[in-house]
Length: 149
Length: 216
Image (cartoon, rainbow over all chains, first blue to last red; front, side):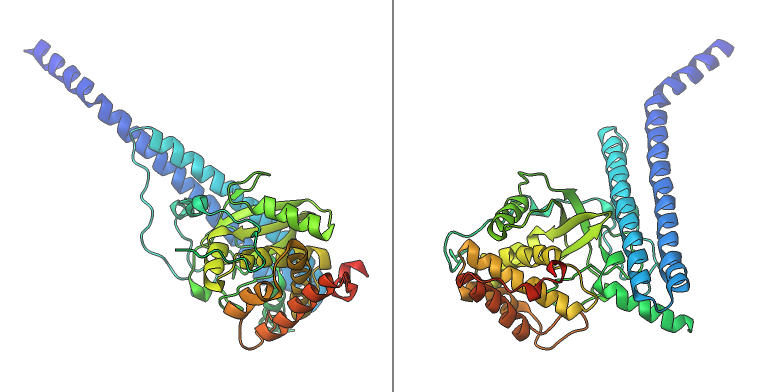
């Protein structure tokens, strides 16, 4: 009887192992996304603070100073954004290549009434590459019109 | 100076640039693009609720055709500079900025395609790209209207040299420019006049360097 119980337990464990692996993968993906979200929040918080407090406090009415600092902030933010995009792509790629589901894209477009009021889900950073069929080129005619459907 | 007035200074400055390089939907502080061609609205901010992404950096043979067009414009104007070209989506915009000493052009290709359709000329997209390059030629002035008009002049120069008709060169701005001046952009009639002037100067083999603050 005791042997039977052990056998049943081992059998159940084996049967559950694919689900366990799947669950672990899900947890890892969710954790990665939430860590990325936390990072994004930090980046946005820094940008907000610098924009509303740091730069105005340092520059006052000195337009040149503010412009230079804002350019620096912009460059930093752009770099952070691109990095986050890359990280998110990597997470999405890795999580979708396994059996674990990728967090769904939010179907709701949020509108921001105040800067920094909402931090949108990072999954929205995923792009659909809509422009893949569009190619811009110099027209051959002075009118530039060839008639389009 | 009150906190409110400080904010106003910064917001005003943001209009001509900077933090607004709308690189993702990470909701930057009042994300506003650098020069904001913004033909649709003349000027807009986050009230539009649109999504913005940078999807990729365009290589020399990017499928969008933008780097190839940029090269042709540079060649036509004999302007030598390296650009970092970023392809955006759902931006409904194109803008120029400088980041870490690099000249950046951000272009939403679908926006340009739609603009071509609305303007009924494929020179519309070229004019927008040439306008953004014009910002880099002329330099970025604190006077936003002057800066936009400078860029418009160079777009007129570019389009004539590339073979557009005068009508086609001004079609985009007349189709979707704003009727009246906005905080960031002159009205479409002033802009049309400057594009036209650039076009006519190019046709006559002239260049008016008063439209180039960086050349002075």
